[in-house]
Structures are given as structure tokens and as C-alpha cells.
View 1 (cartoon, one colour):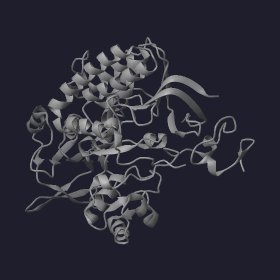
View 2: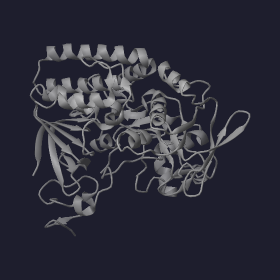
View 3: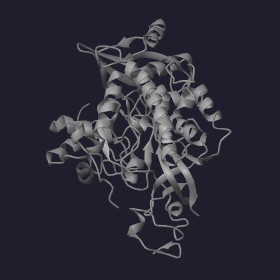
View 4: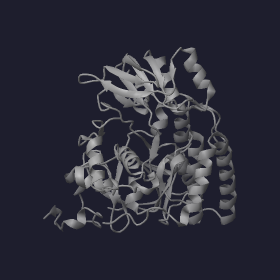
Length: 364
Length: 109
């Protein structure tokens, strides 16, 4: 049995849900696939307040935003395939979805891929010891699973996200031995977070890195390398923040081209101002289209949503153009101020649409 | 990072082995994969892809945008063969994997 739908959205995170609202609220039949059994993606364990959200949203905590995005879809025709994942494509172009028992094809008119981002590893000798995890994993353990991942932790990296996780770990009683940053300055843009860290007397170690971890079957000790000395600390938890990179497998299977923008996370699908890839019916949204702030991600879900409605003749060209202009204006407001280098990279990426670095990658 | 640092945790390939492959003119992730099995474990390169690119960059001076993505194959993440083969006679075959086998009454020949 082939499942027919107007719009297939891969990923029920913030960008996927924002794209679903744009399309479902205008009457399209929308199907959302997510490998998790719950909606909201990584937002569900974000307990920090997100301040720069697009209208109509006021500042709120991540999980509150997830609930808002989920609830606003209640009255519309949205089919959720939770606990399902895309495994590939069929020769006839339909998408192979599995519920882990069966595989079945879905034949959508349009696809919006919102697969999000993956955290990058940070290598040092013995980084594969149990107890060395990413900052995102630490946050998931604490806020979703209510598990304390360790007693004495060191955080590697000083991004806004690493600071949030350091504060959240400290809140549940984890002793933060220090935050280790290789650069001469703190990376977090939000000065308030650094202040919180200072108030808790958590040491910030600049120009430092992990030289080595040691332990028998799990991490027990780390050496922190400073320019002039080495400091050894007893720890049972090392949380690393290596930054994030777009998840690209689905795009590769669909035959999309790729470009490279360091500021947006490295390799990413080539797309135009409609957030449309060079495969006509494949669109993208969220972190998959470049790592950015939660507020910007929501808008990158709305833009392809509007284009899909326009191409399926649900809204007029004029209305679509009007909507699009206002979404791009808002994206500029949110992204250009806070992350000017990301905004510039995004514009550059769109300029390169006709000249992707990698194309025709998929061979059967 | 030193030479003993693991790069591919699934296949336990360390930095020295990656550098040795680069010494044999490996310039892309797939070159290194073919020489070392790096990226061929259960995670299918999802963790080591950026680490390998960094080593290639350090060793050869290539920019990261000159180091292409590895080939990403179907299935996107591991799946039981039994699950993959369900219903397969009733619709178009799966690109990439199933075009290498023939199907007869729902069974792989």
C-alpha cells in the first residue's frame, strides 16, 4: 500500500512543526515522520529561556515552545508517524518509511526535510572512555530522563549551549570542576549566562584544552593543558561541545547537491531563497539548512512551508511573495544581529545555488 | 590529540592509521575507508566524519570544503533485513540495495 500525502515532513522538531503549521493551517494534508515516540525534537529538554523568538511567540522555555508548536497543530489535518523513520528512496521516487516491523512507501507531492543537527565529537587520548559524553547528551539525561550523569564534571567548550548545560548540571547538584575553552575568550554571546557561571564560582579556564583522559573502564581523571602547566583533576563526567553539523543522509538519498559554509556547520544541502533544494520537490528547514538559533530555525520552517503552498496553488503568487518578504525580514532581524556571520554565510550559500561544490553524488 | 587517539570508535581506528592511509595518497573519507575500515561500523561514519576531515586537513593542507562527503548509503540507519524485505513484491524496489538482488514471491533469491 502506498501512502499518499500532500506534504511529507521528515522530523517533528521545531522547524518541522513550524513547516507543518504553515502548510496544514492552509488546508494541505500533512504527514510528519519522526524516529522518536514524541513530538518536539530536542526542544523538549531545553529548560533554558529562549529570548529571541519570532512573532507571535514571546520569550519562553524550550519545552514550553515545543508544547506551543504541537498544540497549534491540533485543529488541523496532520498525520503523525512517530517511532517511524525514513530509510531511503524507491526507484519510483517514493520515500521508504519503516515502523521497525514493516517498510512502506510514502508518495508525497512535496517533501520538507527537517532532520536537524548532530553534535560533533572532540578527540583526545581516551575520549572513548565511558563518562565522556556530549553536552547535548548530558542535557537529555538530566532534563528528559531525570538521571544525573556524574558527580564531578568538566565541560569542554564555552558556547551558549555549553553554558546552559553547565548551569543545568549545577542545578541538579553536579559539581562543575571547570569550563575549559581553547580560545582566549568565552564564546557565549549571552553575557548573562557567563554571569550565572561566575556567581556559582565555576572556574572558567581559557587557553586550555584536554590533554588526556585516564581511567579503568570509565573516566576517572583528566589532564587539562594550560600554556605553561598541566592540571590534573579527578572527574567521572566529561561533557564535550564540539559544535553541531547538519544531518545530511536523507538529502544524499534524495539526490540533492551540497555546498560548504563553515559558519553554518560545514557541508549542507544547496538551497535557494525558497529553502528549496535543486531537487524540485525537496525542501528543507531548521538546522539541516544551517545551524542557527531557535528563533531563526522556526522561520526557516515557515519559508519552505509558504513555497509549498504556492506551488500546490493553495495561495496566490502575490500572497506568497508578501509572506516570504516578511519572513526573510524577520529572519534578518533575528539572525543578522545575534549571529552576523551566520546571516552572511546564509546569503552566500543562496548565491551559490547554481554552482554547488558537490552534485550527482547518489549512484544506485 | 596524539597518534594513539581513536578516530573511528566503531572500528577502533586511531589517528596513526588514518595518517598512514594519507601517506598512501588517501585524500577523501572514502579513500581512507577503503584502506582502513574507518567509518564501516554500526554508526556508518556518523561520528568520525568530521574527525577524519580534520586529520586530512591537518596532514595535507586541503581546505575542509575540498574534502568531499563520504558516500551515504541506504539504509540511512541500521534496519533488520526481515523488516527491509516486507511487502517488497507489491511496490517499486528499493534503490541501491534491492537492485542487487532479485525478488521472487517476497523472498530474496
